[in-house]
Length: 519
Image 1: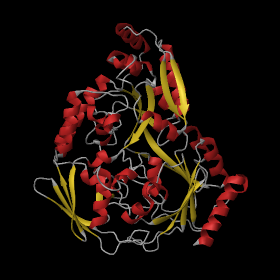
Image 2: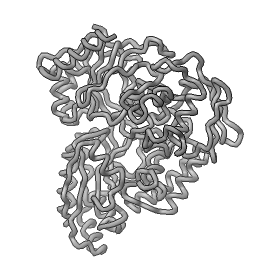
Image 3: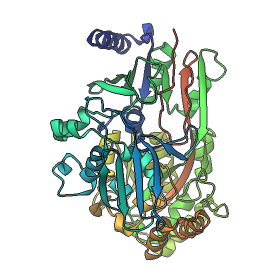
Image 4: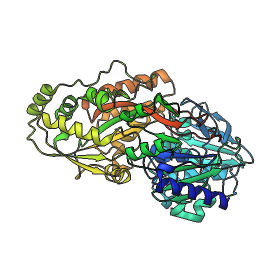
């Protein structure tokens, strides 16, 4: 193994030093990522960029069926749900081990969730756990016996099984958490198809095949994730042979790969929304009229057609149309109407105050964010809204936006890819999701009616009734305009022609367990 890792390291060093001569190692898949991961602790991260690694190192009790957002058994062989929908009992697979050699059992599952949810847990300080909201309905996790674990909820919670399949539900090794403490995110141990091998900051993360994987050892010997934040550099690496897979290809670069037999281009719609968070607590955007004016002022169709070159559609609200059963098709996007925007600004008494706009250089699903930010700035200035852009690297950007915009900025770019229509609005639009309460409502939007609808929708198990509640929420949020609703994106990736059995997933994760790269 050490000799193999040395060979991989040497090959990757060559790729970095001399991309024009680059050849990826045999049976090793090299993936061009959009940013350096923040952590490899699944309970501690929020970005799809990190999830694309984690989903191959860990497993959850459930997982998404290939090509869908429907759940199927994973570490749990089966489960039962009580008549009142508040107790879930899971039977675990036997004989599964974590990569550190310790056993996967009910106590390990209990440890994972208690660590996130109980502040008095001895390893709670290994957090923070920003998406623990996914399991806020859980009041108790009980190890019934070695391979039976029971969850008790405070109320019926429709997204529960889906959230168990999301990265926050991926089960970590208690023994490794105890050994490494707050550094566990640099020394991850799960039960997945690949084992963590190496993390060289700003250069690569290497994972190697788990020959004892319970669902069958993967064909690949290893995967190397290379963080390449600059899109042009990623493209150059792909064209020169230094990458096997490149994710999130800029729209104006797809043409370089389409029609070329040396590459495969993959595209797929998914539950994605790209929007601008508006600071509804202070400054000009505290006035709904000014927020609506921003939605009218920005030519979203031009953004989708010119900058994104048809790889996205204009968004109408907070729920992506990929959630067809919950999406309100009657909702129309704000039309481009600069004159109406000016009239609303005048009615609101907007005094021309300068707006601070946070833009990122790149990040998960961020859709050419610098070009988009510059075009948005021009549209807003055309109606009299002076905008000053501050641009940040992705993880720095998240560190500024996630704690809230109060006292810092008036607006910020953001993108979410979610597994359920509950996730984004519940974590980013409720009053109880303000940053100081552990949520992602960075613009401090608050509407008691929206709060009530979202809380009720979580507890309703009938999908038709849930859909009705979500559609009511969309209508209110569309009118309140806490965000500028910009675009719903079709994800894309490019692979070398020799890469086999790679698929894009509606979850936006990179599932590499079945991928092969014959030489």
